[in-house]
Length: 82
Image 1 (spheres, rainbow, N blue to C red):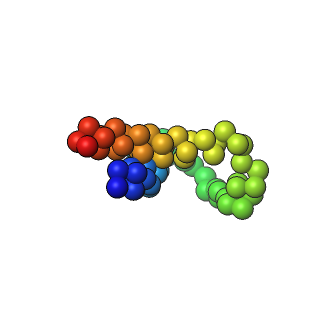
Image 2: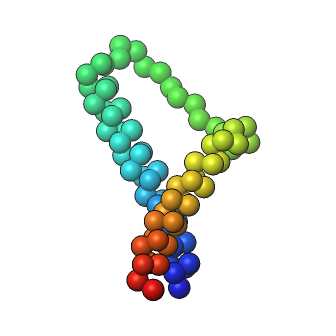
Image 3: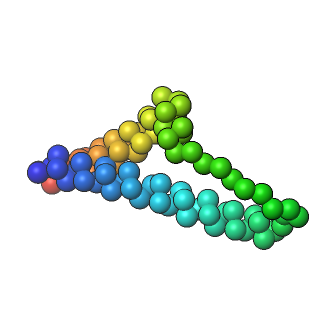
């Protein structure tokens, strides 16, 4: 049961960390755009398939690291009680 709870904690960390980072980035962009307004309009292109195909293998280690940190955190916490 400790492993199941630890896996769930790792998955929760894997979900919460990007959400928190996204909120911080959006708030930062809103603040930055209000302080430094742009004079022209532009567009931003994003191709998610190209992003995943050409992604650097080091970037795959970040989600794994987040998962394992959440897993170890919960596992150590639960192991103290058993």
